[in-house]
Length: 249
Ligand SMILES: O=C(O)CCC(=O)C(=O)O
Ligand SMILES: [Fe+2]
Image 1 (cartoon, rainbow, N blue to C red):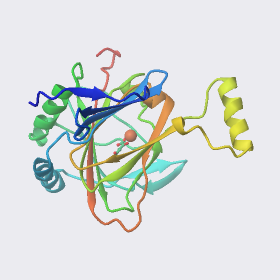
Image 2 (image 1 turned 90 degrees about the vertical axis):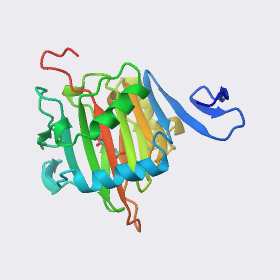
Image 3 (image 1 turned 135 degrees about the vertical axis):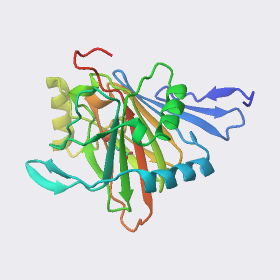
Image 4 (image 1 turned 180 degrees about the vertical axis):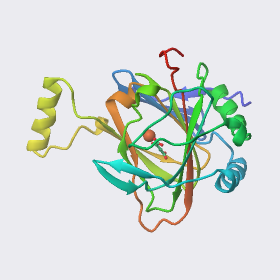
């Protein structure tokens, strides 16, 4: 472990922790306001080890491309998926689709990744994992929030990326209070640009870890948009904590 001190940039919304020589950035922390926060650790897993993980996941995960329902219509989900969960948890249902829950014992090496993520995020206790595979730039995830009831009101979600880097967008949901709604409407009708604090983008590199926490799922949406001309595959793992039936941890 290097003894070089971490220094923090002055911007109060974006603490970019860097080595004191300003080179190897360890993590970027973005305070989204009102109790929402995102943290990005660009090199969570080293390059070579991350490729080993990519190969393992690409070949051993039982990927499926399910039919989901979006705005009342059935369509093929624009990416492959797989779901792993500890036994006895409430079922996950999203976009009218209930994925089969594989057990951690079906893919034992995943426990190693789970342990590494737990170690990096003290206090976390993930018990489920949603895996996505984007086979080129036509595959994407549309704007959404992971605000399913099973995750509770302030879920921490840890997202590991492997393979082709892709952009990850965050945008603030339209205001809920009448004052917020009014200023949103005024901005739209005057064709004003929305506040740039209402949108963020991150490049999710091979081996990176992105963490969303606090009220990020309640107040923000995220997406990984299509990228034409991109052919390489990306695999993403999101670790989540599903609450037990009685709502306790
Ligand atoms: O692929 C990603 O980075 C995000 C995936 C995601 O948002 C999800 O599975 O809910
Ligand atoms: Fe998501």
